[in-house]
Image (cartoon, rainbow over all chains, first blue to last red; front, top):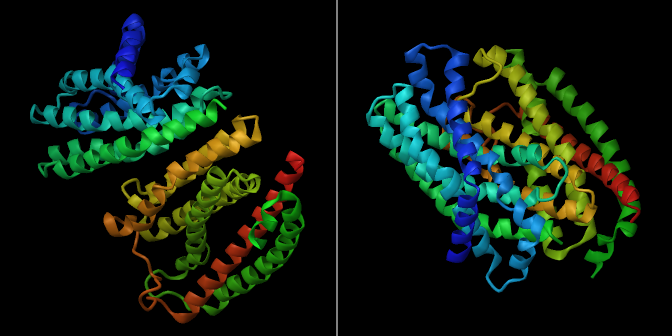
Length: 218
Length: 232
C-alpha cells in the first residue's frame, strides 16, 4: 500500500502542473462568486463557507478523472488486478494519494481564501478542520465513480452526475459546521458526523471501488 | 427448485406479459376508485381545506419512490451476487418508474407547499433535499446504464451504483425525525393508530395499491421490451 501511495505521489510530482491546475481552479471558482453576487462584505461573509465548500467539491471532482484513467490506458491497472495485493487496499491507497495531491492543498489554501472573504479569524480553524475531515470522504466516494466510468462514453460529465449527489451530505455537514460555529453554536456536532462519514467511507468505499474496477476491466 | 424456473428470460417473458396485463387492469380500477374516494368521499380537512387532497397522489408516490429504489437495489445485488441475466434487466426496468414517482412526489409536494407553507420549494428541508438526491441517483443509474454498450457490463456497473446509493433511503425515511425541519412527520405508521379520518386513510391506501399495480405493470412491460431488445 505504501508503494502505491509513493508511486502515485511520484507520478503527480512528475506532472506538477496537473496538481497546480486543480488548485488554481479552486481559487478561481471561489473568486468568481463575489464578481457574480456583488461585493457586499456582509453578504459574502455569510456565503463564504458554502462557496469554499462547493468549490472544493468541484475541484476534487475535476481531478477524479485522472485517478485510474492513465493506469487503465497503459495496462498498469490490469497488473494491479492480477497482483497479489488485495485490490481494496490498492484502491484505498490510490484514494489516499488522490487526497494528498488534490485535497490537502485545498485545506491549506482555504484559510487564505477565507481571509479574502473577511471571515472572522476564529472560523479559519473550523473551516480548515471541516475540509480536512471532508475532502478525504470526497476522494473515497469519488474513487467509486471514477472506477465505474472508466472507459465509458462521455465519462467526465457522467462522473459528475454520479458523484455529485453522493457528495451532498459531505457538503451539508462541512459548510454547516462553519455556519454553526459562526452563529456561536459550535460546529462540533457536524464535525463529528463528518468524522463518522470518513470512517464509514474509508471502511466501505475502497471495496466498492475494487468491485467497480473489476467490472470496468473485464 | 421451482424458484429458478422463472429466472430465465425465456420462461419469464410470458409470465411478465400476463402480470403486466392483470396489474394494468387492477391499477386502472384501483386508481379510479382511489381518486373517487379522494375527491368525492373524503371530507375537507379542517386546517388545510381542499389543498390536502393532493396527499392521495403525493404520499403513495413518495412511498413508491423509496420502495422501488430498494427493490431495484435488491435486484442489483442479486445480479451482482448470482450473475443472473434477469436481475439486471429487472433493475433497469424499474429505474424509470422509480424516477417518475420521485418526480411526481416532488412536484405534487411543491404544489401542496405553495398554499400551505407559502413556498414551492424550501431548501432547508431535509426530506425535500434527500428526495431530490434520490431523483439524481435514479438519473445517474439510468445515465450510467445508457452509456455502457455491453448490456451485461452496464447491468453490473449500474447495479453497483444502485447499491452505493441505497445509503440515501434510510436518510429520506428518517429525515423528518432526525432533523425535524418543515416537512411534517408521518401521519400513517404500522405501530400506532393513524392520525387522520378513516375515509382519507382508505383513499390513500387504495391509491398506494394502485401505484403498486401500476409499477408492476410498467416494469413488466419494460422488462419484456428489454428481453426482446437483447434477444435473450
